[in-house]
Length: 164
Image (cartoon, rainbow, N blue to C red; front, side, top):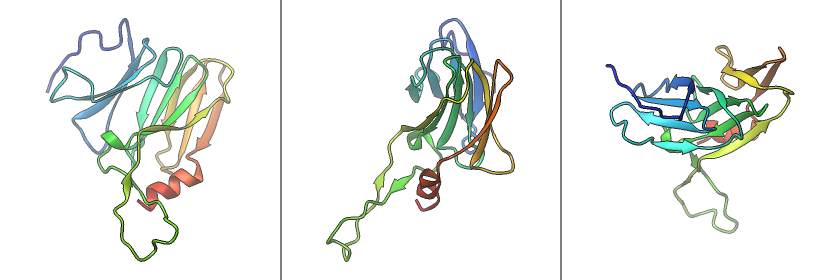
């Protein structure tokens, strides 16, 4: 299949990644400080558009095992870890405990798209952020000054995903 998008990010598209669990869905990022998520079967408008950075976004990457987790790296010296269940292969559910209503069964409420955490360990532009192929919860980022930082998904988020 071949397709094209005319200037989806203004001047330059800097990163692209396909969803590992939904092959027709992909993410792009660029000079407009936005990350856009697309369905290759309908390219007229993006499925989702996010602006979590203040400068060019150089890389976007889906988690290989949990496609609701997405990393972006930017010239604003930040790495953003987002939870995007609205475009994931299996939307997450959040079970809210309710005091005094233990006997009643309530359906879990859907989790919302949100930034889980912004990592600011770099002092210069971050050009790449990648997930570990050995551990679904670990990722690394590399900045212009050569600094390599290894981080992980916060424990609370990890357990929310595993118990949903």
